[in-house]
Image (cartoon, rainbow, N blue to C red; front, side):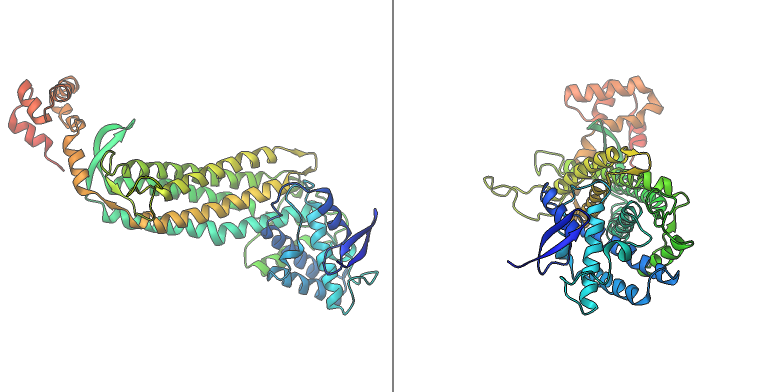
Amino acid sequence: MNYRIEKDTLGEMRVEADKLWGAQTQRAMENFVIGKKKMPIEIIYGIATAKKAAACANCDLGVLPADKRDLIVTACDEILAGQWDDQFPLHIWQTGSGTQTNMNVNEVIAHRGQQLHGGKLDDYPLYLSPNDDVNKSQSTNDIFPTGMRIAATKMLLTHTIPAILDIMKTYQEKIVEYADIRKIGRTHLMDATPLTLGQELSGHLSQIEHGLDTLLKSMEHLKELPIGGTAVGNGINAPEGYDKLALQYINTITGLDFVNTPNKFEAMASHDSLAEVSGALKRLAISFMKIANDFRLLNSGPRCGIGEVVLPANEPGSSIMPGKVNPTQCEALSQVCCQVIGNDVAITTGAMQGHLQLNVFMPLIGRDLLQSSRLLADVIRSFNDHCLKGITPNRERIRMHLNNSLMLVTKLSPVIGYYNAAKIAQHALNEGLTLREAALELKLISEEDFDKVMKMD
């Protein structure tokens, strides 16, 4: 294997000859051999977006030559196109500021710029300096959180929210379709008064709607970018107007509507905005856990459980019991909900670790937020496509449970009183009678009045 010698302020490092990274990336590869998971590529793309915008703003403000801007822009465009994904080898577990990843991006851009300029990777000095040119007017402390926010916003807008909107549409269709199917309700897992299947599903939809509303509101804070804050938030080494101009370029590049944070000190010393988004995703996870459990209960059986709703049979459910089919989409959904809730605990704990002018738990927070966003998007789509769209009511089972329920006696309470109605229910249960038979046997209501009161709406 061929190597070249790269240099940084600590000395020389051997780097594989064909790699675009430099000495700082190589040091991090050797110093942080922790786990197998690499920094999410979405964060790399978010940082590259900020680097491209920074180069354009720096050039407009006269602190970066146009030819260097063009080299940086071209290299960033190649990164954003996925051309150099294999040049970002660092693991999540590194410095909490993300400095090693920021320098990884700087070094890749600088070395790719060297090639685009007609030079060789081992020509020194590089035409583009990773620090003086690619990182101009920046610090890891403002560029990494900017990249995280860009990455998270794009993930939510392109994956999570569309999946939520799709499943809401399915629910709306099912609610209309099943509006007239009366079934027994259950509280405490015990028989309760009736409702329709459409009404039962409407509760699910309302949970999702409120969850989506919470998520959208939380994204308002997420879209506040700290770019231009540089080291501690006061913009040292950045030219006047740089932050506003860089933001304009970010919005042009992404097509989104980010804003400059009104207080860069807050946005760099804390990551409350990301914790808020995680909390919104946790709320959705809580809702979808309830939804998954409801369908598991309603589908239970097929003969010895509730069995009122039939889920699609997607695959055999047992390696030993022939013919068994399990609610696997519900199980996948609930497992993801557990992971999202667990991620929220980690994000919450990480977000509490802001000390003075910087929170140094950014790789953890960024990675877990992206994972929660993508996992929820994927599992919601899977549940929607392979389960919810194919559910069917077991009308015979629904009718049987409705007719057998003792809680229909609740309708008699306004006529004969709570205690007399309770006597009827208890007598029916103890003697194995229908409510009608029990009521007439106890002579607490006339046959005519019973039939009138108990007539279905």
